[in-house]
View 1 (cartoon, rainbow, N blue to C red):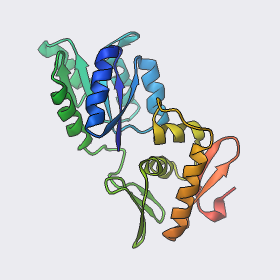
View 2: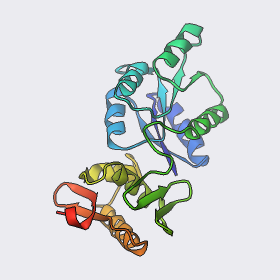
View 3: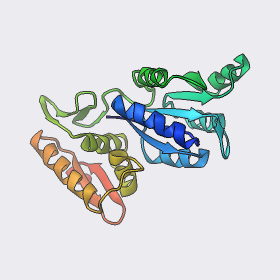
Length: 228
């Protein structure tokens, strides 16, 4: 399932958008502030952002400029109550991919987000992989050579994060956020159970890659000879 981040401080509007997007098969995490959004984006790779301009700690475009300056090309739909042409131009120049003025029809919002999700992101391959592994997120498959195995949504999100940081330790919190989002309660051993399932699937397809537990820190995707 696609997961996006909604940065919106109007509670009722945020709930309406979350319901409509959820009904369309798009998972949504919600934050109300620029600083919270930056922290959330640092923890997991969202497929798109929906960003309100009027936030409690400033103009949402400040966040967008910071993201683009850091080389993060995640697609972004900017929401605003401002309808003037120069405001739309300002948003696009800051790095927005699309612009939607309030008030808007919820169906139009869903259509715009779906369009963003169809766009390739420069820094993220459509079918990422590492070494002998390949991932096909659209099909929910983990591949190694001619072999493939299905991954559950949480398993796929964990593997996407691990293959993007090969051999690096990825902290438990980041993996949990990738698998279940920021708002869903996660039991203490849920991550370990999912990692155990993925390990079995890596063996099943004959991959040399292993998910290594780095005690007290998190997990890393490594080949046996470099495992610690």
